[in-house]
Length: 373
Ligand SMILES: *Cc1c(COP(=O)(O)O)cnc(C)c1O
Image (cartoon, rainbow, N blue to C red; front, top):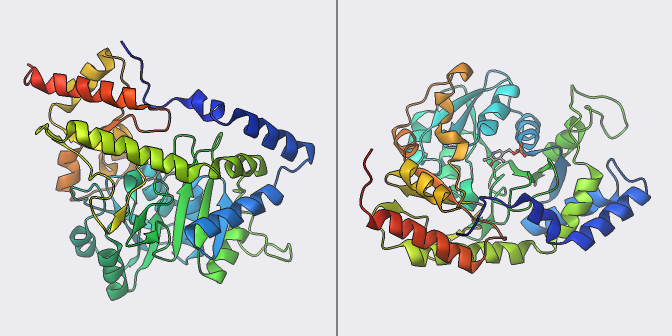
C-alpha cells in the first residue's frame, strides 16, 4: 500500500533546502529582519509577476484582505458581498473592517455566482469580494460589470490564485485590491504565515503601507490606527528562493490536473474541475483539485484506508453554518455542495505514480457499487 499524505509539509523545505539555508544565513547575517532589502526585492518581484503597480507584503492573507478593504475606503456599516464557499477569513476581514459580510451563492464552478451577488446588493453595499478559489478566476467580466453598475469596489480574495488568469489578466488585478496568502500549503507557500496586497492605485498603496506598520506614514508620524502586520524579511528571503521555481511548479500542478482528468473523466458519480486549456478564457493554477463526489464520505474513508489523505474544505461548512458568527445566507447550491465536495492531493510532491494510484482507488470504489449506509 502507498502512503500519500494530503500535503507533505517537510517536502516544502527538502525541495530547495540548500538555497533556503543560504537565504536564511544571508539575511540573518545582515541582521535583516524587519522591512529590509529582501522584502523590497520580493515586493518588486510580485509586482512584476502580476503586472501590478504596487505590491505590499503583510503578515498573512487575512490581514491582506483586512488592510486591503480599509485602504480602499470600506467603512464601518458598509456591506461586503462574499461567496459562501470560502475560508472564514474572507468574511472575517470584512467584519474586522467594521463592515457586514453578506453571503452569496456559488455556481458549479465553486466560484461566486454573479446573479446571486447582484440580488444581494442594497444601498449599503460598498464592495464585492470574489474569491478566486482553488486557483481559478471567476468570470470577472460579469462581476466587474455588476460592480460598475452599482458603484461597488472590487476587492479580490486571490489568496488561492497567484498567477491564475481570466482572459489573460492575472488574479488580483481586476479591482481596487488583490490579496494573496503565502500560508505553507498555498501554491507559493512560506515557512509560516505571510501575505501581500497588490494594487495599481497609489493612494491605496500608501494607505496599505501605513496600516501594516502601526499607522505610521512616510514621515514616521502616525496617521491612523494601524496594525503590526508586516511580512517578515526572513519569509520574504525564503519566498524569493521559491519564486524562481513558481512557474515550473504551477506547470507541474496543471500536469497533475490533466492526469486526474484523463483517469477520472468517465466516472459518472464525479464532477471534475475543467482540465487545463479546456476553456480559452481561463488559465487555472490548481491550488486545489476540488471534485464533487457522490457518497463523498464513504469515498473519503475508502481512500484513507488505502493510505490516501483527502480534505473537505472548511470542514464541510459554508460560513453561515458557523452559528456563532450570526450570519445568514440564501445559498442553496453551496449548501447542497457541502455534501459532495472533496479535495484530492494536489501539490508538487505528488508524482505521476501517486495520481495513478489515487485514481484507480477511486475507480475501484465506484465499481463496487453504492456502499450500504
Ligand atoms: C488561505 C486563505 C485566506 C487567508 O490566508 P491566511 O494567510 O491563512 O490568513 C483567505 N482566503 C482564502 C480563500 C484562503 O484560501
